[in-house]
Image (cartoon, rainbow, N blue to C red; front, side, top):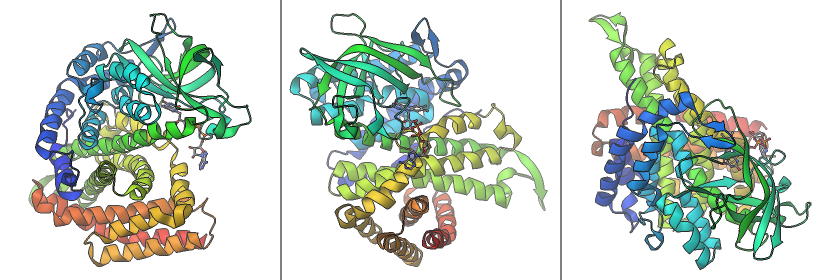
Length: 530
Ligand SMILES: Cc1cc2nc3c(=O)[nH]c(=O)nc-3n(C[C@H](O)[C@H](O)[C@H](O)COP(=O)(O)OP(=O)(O)OC[C@H]3O[C@@H](n4cnc5c(N)ncnc54)[C@H](O)[C@@H]3O)c2cc1C
C-alpha cells in the first residue's frame, strides 16, 4: 500500500498559476506554503497512519458514550498541541487568523489523510462564522476560545427521522426557561455527536420555537454544550451510532435531547439563515473531500500502473500504464482530481476576495455536485486500474470509495444542488448568478472549443428560461455547467503548464478534456428533448 502523500506540487500550481490566489490581499504565497508543508508532514506522518485502523476498528458505543479508536488519541493530542484546531479562527479568540485559502488547502490535505477525523475537527470554522454573523460579543468570547484550543469540537444537528432534505418538518422544540432555552427532541445522523477525544462538544442545533406548522420560519439556532459551565453533563444522550458503508471512525449519532439547556444564537426564526452560513462552509469542505479522494486515487493508481507488468509490446513486457485504455483511465482520474481542485480553489479564492458573490453562489452548488458525483467516478476508475487488487482491501481504494460515497448525499443531496442551479439561481435577480458565470468563462482564453461549449450552455439556459420544467433535466444542466467550468479551468492549466513540474502531464490531460468537450452537445440535446 502506498503511504499517503500530500499533492503539494499540484496544489501550488493551481493556487498560484490557475486561480491566482495572489489577488487576495490576505493571502501570502510564501507563508501559505510554509504552513501547508508543515501540515503535510504532520498529516503524512501522524494522521494518515490512523486512517486504516479507524476503518477497521471504528467508533464504538460503550455504556452510552462513544469511544474512538485508541490510535486517534495521541494523534488528536498532537493536533491540538500544534494549534491546528484554531488555524482559521480569529486571533482575538485564541486562533491563528490564517486566511481561508490556506485553511482550505490544509483541510484538503487533512481529508486525504483521514476523512473521518477531518469531519470531527473541521466544523469550528463554520461555528465561528455563525457566531461572528449572528452571535453576541459575550457568545463569541464564551464559545470560540474552547473551539480554537480544541477543548471542544463542534457538530451541526439538523436531521431528524422525519426531516432530512426537508427541514421544514423539524419537530425538535425549544422553549424559553428564564435566561436559557430547553431543547427536547430527537436528532439523527449527527456526525461527531459524541466522542471521547475532546473535553466537550458544542452542538449547533436547529429547533422549533414557533408553532409545529410554522415551517422553516419557526426554526431557530441554538448553542448546546455537552458539558455545562458547572461541569455537569447536559441532557443530551447518544442513543445509538449508525453502522455504515464507510467512515467507520466517524461516529454518526442519534441524539436524544431531554430539556437540554441551550443558548439562542441571533433571533428566534433566524435559524435557517444562520444554519446556511454553517452549511455553505461545510459544502466547500465536502467538495474538498471529493478532490482529496480523487487525488489520492490518482496517486495510488498511477504508482501501481507504473510498476505492474501485464502484456507486452515489440520491446518486451510492458507495465499497465503503457496500455492505451489504462492511460485513458489514469488521465480521466487526473482530469477529475485537478479539475475539481481548480473549481474548488476558484471558489475559495473568489469567496475570500469577496468581489463576485453571485459567482460564489453558483460555484458552491457546482463544486459540491461535481466533486462528490464525478469524484466517485475517479475512484471507480482507480479500482478498475488495479484490477482484482482494486477490489481487495490491500490498496484501500475500496475504503476510498466507501468513504466518499456519502458526499453526494449529505450537505444537500446532489439533486437538491442541481435544482439550486436550474431552479432557484436561474431566476433569482434575473439570473445574476448565471450572468456572473458567463462573464467569468468569457474572461478565460479557451479558444473555439470553450466558445462552443459556452454557446451550448447558453442555449440550455435559454431553454430553461423559456419555462422548461427543470425537475428531470436539472442534473443534465448542472453536469453541463460543470463541463464548461472544467474546460475553462483546464484551458488555463494548459496555458500555464510550464509552471508545473510535469508540463507534459498537464498538456496530455488538457488534450483529453478538449477531446471530451463534445459531450456538452449530448447534455444540451438531453435538456432540449425534455
Ligand atoms: C454519514 C452521515 C453523516 C451525516 N452527518 C450529518 C450531520 O452532521 N448533521 C445533520 O444534521 N445531518 C447529517 N446527516 C444527514 C444528511 O444530511 C441527510 O441524510 C441528508 O440531508 C438527506 O436526508 P435523508 O437521508 O432523509 O434523505 P431524503 O431527504 O429522504 O432524500 C432521499 C433522496 O431523495 C432526493 N431528494 C429529496 N428531496 C429532494 C429535493 N427537494 N429535490 C431533489 N431531490 C430530492 C435526493 O436524491 C435524496 O438523496 C448525515 C448523514 C450521513 C449518512
